[in-house]
Image 1 (cartoon, rainbow, N blue to C red):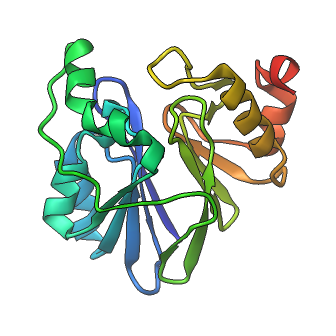
Image 2: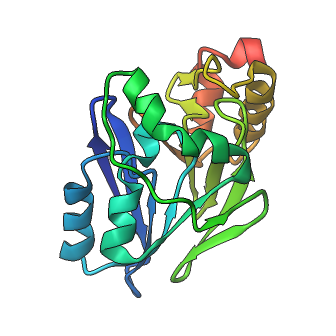
Length: 208
């Protein structure tokens, strides 16, 4: 498996390129900014990107989705409960003092239980609302792409429109029930593991 992490944009968001090394089939997770850097890696490694997966649709996670679609022909996939958030991404960015290009509408919706494949790699979609109503994680191949649901030592904010602390607590508990050695790759910050978060995450005592 090829797994490339790029820290992009003013909010230092993690964009991931995941590919099956044998076939070159790939997905891009949360292309938030700096599309040229993302596209350079895709071209350098000769990858065929078929899907852009958005763990949620806050502007710092989708800002470059249109550019990646244009460059690769990939489909943009989101959870339907985040459609309104997605459609206001440009306004979100402006509120924070940033400007992003117009983003094309999503090409399809993903939901709990769907399986995203890249060659021989398979990732199950987990619906994990809380940070946003349509937040999802991708779980498979020993890793969890957690978006902004859980970070090393922390969790996502719930004070944005559509956020819910009660939903986040449920999602947090669900993720910490995954195998302890599962590597977590989140939307911001360094990687961690389920076992490490169960021991050290600030919100364990409050949420579990």
